[in-house]
Length: 262
Ligand code: HXC
Image (cartoon, rainbow, N blue to C red; front, side, top):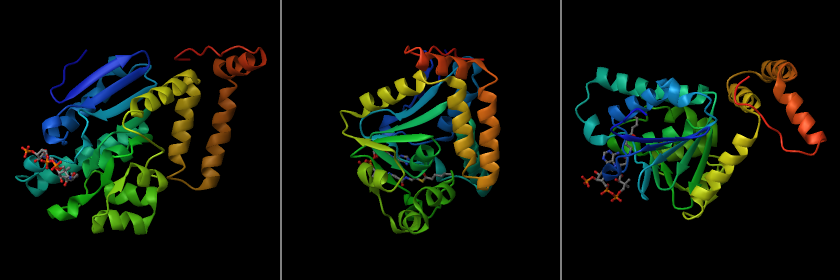
């Protein structure tokens, strides 16, 4: 398995866990971290037949406390643009990936950390997690998508309160406001994520990937176009083996057995 300096990676069956491993700086995102996350996605032997990727931060305190402030201080405008684009393209790749991405947020998810979580398909957080976009306090603005994705997730007034007014959201608030799908105690976080992963892995692989693609495209296109794409994709379910297996298994009162690739 490829070695990374800033990440820990693990693959078990169809499930990968990628842990940002810079706990001394609360897992701040240096350029190297983001480049290594790109390399994980480039590594076809690692991502082959992957069903779920869990993104996590090392230690108990922080998912990711933002982009690396020390490294950003010396950036030229050109370098800053490159850095923003590197993070944005990572977000887009995570969103476009055929596997489900889960952000497991046990602590700080600030600035680039909140943006990274928002790039994942599902965000599960502990009660004491803390989401925020404090860039303006540093004389910056978000650069990995925060000005765009936060308003889409939580609506403009709250997004602007978080982005410009320093509002931080704990896990429970983030759930109430739609940023997080489930909040747990710190002790229950792993078990909740593992159970979710198990359910995703039990479902038909192609159907899950197609559902993600269609649901994600709903954010970008008019309803009628999305519905047409859904009907067409629903039809293709009947050209493959998954629907036959899933429907038969139900009628025969047995668990479905799906293969990872058709
Ligand atoms: C670099 C960081 C860091 C960061 C924390 N550290 N956040 N280093 N980049 N984003 C370092 C601290 O300097 C400190 O190092 C160590 O981690 C522990 O942090 P403390 O501040 O001592 O911990 P605590 O008092 O518990 O406070 C935690 C915190 C605070 C509230 C999360 O660290 C904080 O406010 N961090 C910055 C959060 C932030 O502003 N994020 C947005 C960044 S801008 P030492 O060496 O002193 O032990 C951004 C832009 C994204 O994300 C887009 C870019 C294109």
